[in-house]
Image (cartoon, rainbow, N blue to C red; front, top):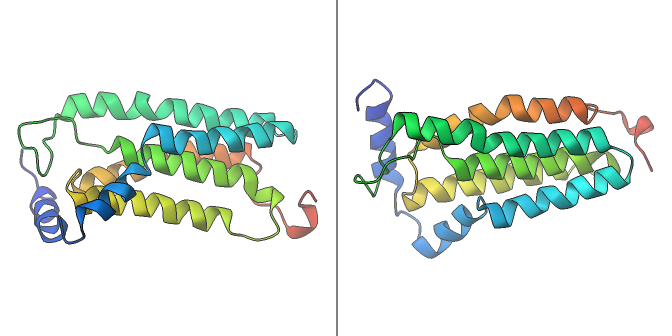
Length: 175
């Protein structure tokens, strides 16, 4: 594989991989595992649906269902090897990053209207960034694998935001 972005991608990866202990980076990467991230979204979906926001809950669930539909074909098509496993293929784009971002940010968009504070979205972004950092620092993914997943999730999350009603002023927030 060659291309203008691969040289800096490889250089950045070489500079970052294993600069943080594996025990830490593996825990961060695990935040993108389906059994960890998806239950967070499911709970937020149930809460939103119970509060009468079924369309928003359905949109978040659909976004999560579309993650593998987007990611898996691209992994098979590119067959990119991993940073520490050049014999393996299917690392581009990162499924863990896409799962974390869609689950945590989708959940935040669903519950944000019910909180007086603005913590849900920043918390979701921190969890997603921690997942991405763990994946790159541990050597599970190249930096471009993670970036591609973020870019692929933007349209999905915009759909959830639209269904969730976008931003509301404090005056319009449900109590």
